[in-house]
Amino acid sequence: MRSNVAKKQLESKTASSAASRPYRIEDQIGYLLRRAHQRASAIFQTGIGDPNITPTQYSSLAKLDEYTELSQNLLGRLVGMDKATMQGVVRRLKERGLVDSRPDPGDARRTLLSLTTEGQRLVNRLLLNGPAVSRETLKPLNVQEQKQLLDLLSRII
Amino acid sequence: MRSNVAKKQLESKTASSAASRPYRIEDQIGYLLRRAHQRASAIFQTGIGDPNITPTQYSSLAKLDEYTELSQNLLGRLVGMDKATMQGVVRRLKERGLVDSRPDPGDARRTLLSLTTEGQRLVNRLLLNGPAVSRETLKPLNVQEQKQLLDLLSRII
DNA sequence: GTGTCATCGTACGTACACGAACGATATGGG
DNA sequence: CCCATATCGTTCGTGTACGTACGATGACAC
Image (tube, rainbow over all chains, first blue to last red; front, side, top):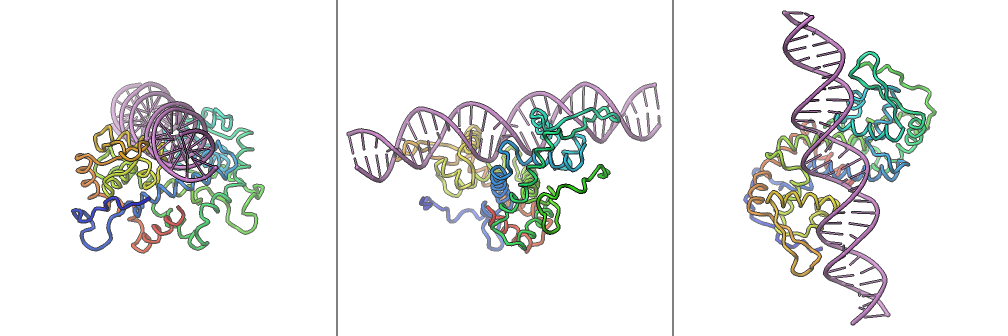
């Protein structure tokens, strides 16, 4: 795969005028986050134990397991998803019989979500595989580096 | 936002049986990567200088700026995108007159892509904003931490 | 009470992202 | 030369992810 195609030299020296480092797409934080997220999603899909469950569905189910009952909007905030995105995720989980809903008796705008028996069974099983998925994703790093990465990521969110 | 709703205690002690740390979604690498990628995309969209250009389109344009002419498939590998995804990205860039294509004279399976004059003008302008976008995304960290994060991310890809 | 404003859930459009399948073309082995 | 195999680009289907806009409801000032 020769890449001698014509690396431009002498480009008009746009940014990074001052010091040294050229601006390379592959070194930019946004690019690296996209690629890392891609790989993490792929590992999740093969390792979580149910190929039809996506990462967002998984975190939604896990939060419902933690809180037993939540409004759709609050669930979205807890898992960091836009309410429009949340709407689609919840719809699919309800269609599969994993999640149930009822009107909030105290606030007619709200819908309260909870796990069905089947949803509870499924999430119990998936949570067994969660740690292995995370371990596999972080495998290229040693334990200290893993902690560092988690810390740095949480600080840029 | 009271969260006293019923934190289950006494769960069946699935994984993490040995030592200490409970398994929390918010601390998992996949979840943090999704959230960080979300934020980076949002900063990109407001800072790159053209709200209609997405991160993947940007990296494709930048690679075409670097190599002047590439097959669609090779471009996809260079920017880490599936060929099916690449197809949509390239289609939109061509529809907007930013990218041009011609058949590869030496290999009839291939389509060679290149920037149009307008695409070249646009990418020159966007590349001016690229460094500021990356800086803004990494702003919560000091310079050493920024380098660490980039290094750790590139190692789990 | 009534009007103003925020919040909740929904609907629509655009763009990624990937798996799967497909036709056309290349390539290497026999 | 011919066939098996691989690659290239396309198409289809599913599932995020977000912006925008909408109607219904709730909260609060007046």
